[in-house]
Length: 362
Image (cartoon, rainbow, N blue to C red):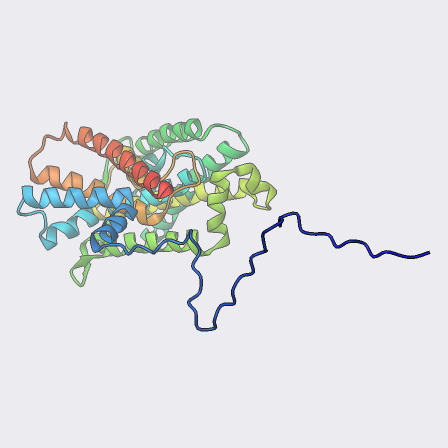
């Protein structure tokens, strides 16, 4: 029995009369093959680079630059050194309250009581000093404690009481304003110690001391939000409170702490006002609520929580201060100034949204 070797199988790709193509060897010094899909890199022109940087600027900063440029042409007194320092110093109390309001908005809440808290804490300080002859340092501390207690009440009502922050702080705003009037029957109190008045009258290197206090508050708040776990937790709570709780964050304690900080900062702003005026007015700060909320909103903070920062809030403060100062220099009617502030809020928010949209699609 003979065996036959199986016929060799040919590749189906080769047919009769054709021979397979064998690639020729490539020399070592030959240029490497370039894929057909590779496109030469394009280099940006200086104009395109500048435009890209311009688009990356925050909306509030663009608004501030625009307002400063316009007012510098409209008034020769606007860009003077003294006027620029006055813009910051005269709005230092609003700026300090805006830090607390921004922290509250960051966690998804809102605090309508900051102005009334300022008035109540300031009147408490003055009332203890003038009526009960308590040492003034103790009175200042007591006023700060009153501010913190109002914030604590706001936090407890909005967490354990499950009351909407808008409603809770609206109630404490009304109560604090009434107590500020009740303490002294609506009468102002004047004549404070010289060291207390020096907080706003003393200057260091030509800059009022209150400006340094304002900057210190913003620096501390910015450092806390950026570098401390408890500060970064505020973004998580404002973004999604339930997810933050599941990740181990004590949401209730965080919210209460933020409201306490807001009340404490409102009381600190009250001391700035009392030192500047050398008097305690029962209605001091109650008209500043619009400006405080405007600073935070113009600064780009989201009222739904989870978005915001101290740098943009400070820019928002400068925008409000520059607008108010510029309108005063231009003799704009005080009745029209709130209208301009309202327009500025809308323009700043729309500009910031447009900037974020461009960054997302770029």
